[in-house]
Length: 141
Figure 1 (cartoon, one colour):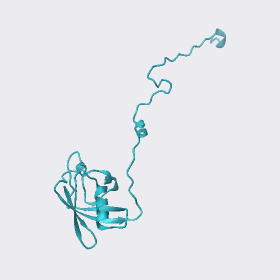
Figure 2: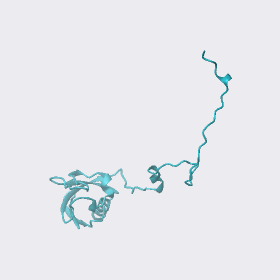
Figure 3: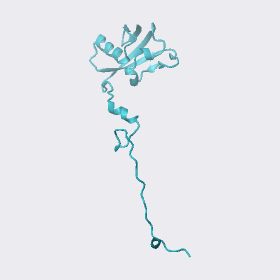
Figure 4: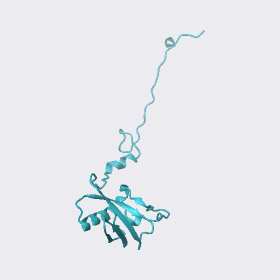
């Protein structure tokens, strides 16, 4: 479990959330618990120094990027059994939409095949044949 101390205007509240959840789940929990009439908030992380490690995301002090909303807490280093202090800012003109990836997006990375041989058989291309007569070219000497 990860514990957060959320600073609102005049009080601090404690929140606990599982490691398998994401930042958007935390934001939704804050909005519901505090009874805010808004769809989205930005989080501000209050740390003395960044929480770093190799191979995972770094949690840095300051405003948390909205790109991190879909990241699980397990993707960050050493957040287990920590008390993190956060503040939030109300956002009126933004609504979170979960990114949707379709199977067609993967076609970008596939090797492009020739449209004529889609079944995998190779077609042998014929080389052009040219027939020349002596009359086609003038003599050089």
